[in-house]
Length: 345
Image (cartoon, rainbow, N blue to C red; front, side, top):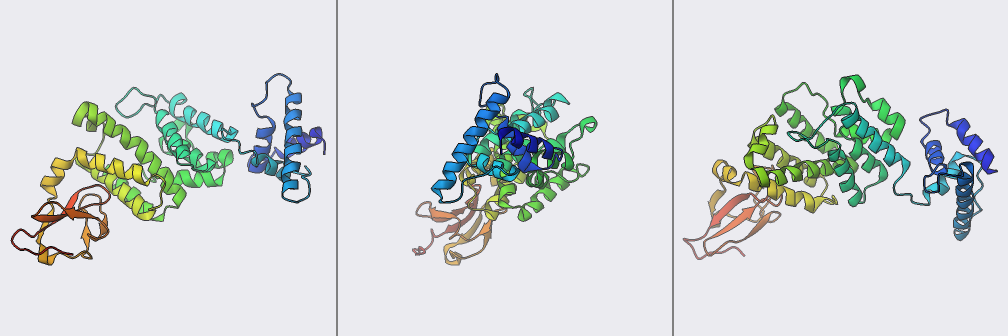
């Protein structure tokens, strides 16, 4: 098949906007990697390169050379080039930018910083975590349905048509279902849904939490408690909810590539409310003779459940043994042995 015949076939099949394989093939054949001048000559050069490289790759695997008889065979070779900054990602950035900052002048809550900085940050975090292209795109688009203006409402069908079923599934998984509920009810519902998340959804959620609440920690370090005036919930409600989200995510998927980032963030968030938590949720004090490494304990802040053995414990001094939550660092249990000479082995 000649280059002209391949383009003709691709353009013919392009009538179906939901044919993702055809779309990706057209994207690469129109790659900006070559100089703009030359038009079809540039495409011809890319096509010839793909044909040559595709054939050599097949020969290395002792298979038949690639013949470009249809869209799938062209796309198969395209994917072997591992294009990093793909047209699909560029289109996602444009789509999110229009939704958040062209069709509405949306800013970060309580700031004059354009809102688009948040989904872009989520995308960067996912990219650094070696997420797949669809997961990165879902991170960039994760707020488009939830936060789009009424006159330019983004629908699941629009995202499906432009970015595929996998992307829209991930976006919907982290989208609030009913914005008419109270703040407290919406957050409880969001927390309940985490138990049904796939690992990809957990990764998008993790990056979203990291981007949002690392920013909150930075702002609190600079401006203090006044930063919580931006929110509908109280300082304690905001912190406790996010700690429960982090705990649920890490409990569901301990192999999460953002595990340690989330743990560090959890400790920073707990530190913002540490005085309030110590007063409202004091550590339980027991006698050392009643202490067991397999006894069941629960963090009153983030909801982590486990045992002293699975938590974080150590000899604090010659007077007691303390157990802290492995997620947020809240002290949960203190076992006193000051009046005895007994220490657990």
